[in-house]
Length: 200
Image (cartoon, rainbow, N blue to C red):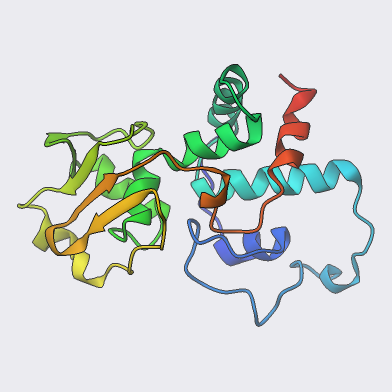
């Protein structure tokens, strides 16, 4: 399954929440599901609730279903709550850290910076968006790339205790590993775990 490239606000309306990693736009004008019967929908099954929470994760981080399954398998094999580890692994992705540092307006924009070789990890170029950062690692934007990627128009970094951002020097340091509180949107992560419990 390929990465989603369709209307982003429509997705957020269907899921009932704003996803900062997907789009900077808001759904406050029409906070109901899209479609002719969007405002009339009332009944939601247990499966639909789990699917909805899983889709929030997939759409916000911009990952494929196959990749999300593999991350879930990794989370299950780690010590600690599976849901918390799932969030930790997704937040440690290089494209997400670039986004959280304020170097890209969305995760998709941050992924493009990474894919085009504008981002360094500990001084070495890394162009793999799914690269997992560890505690103590430093990301930065190549000095030659700074004028071309127009980082002066990027958003302010999100307040997060696990990332130390020096925007003046285009650097960010992973001061500690993220936890379940790092999510920027409303998520019942246990429902995501339950969704995959019968599939893995």
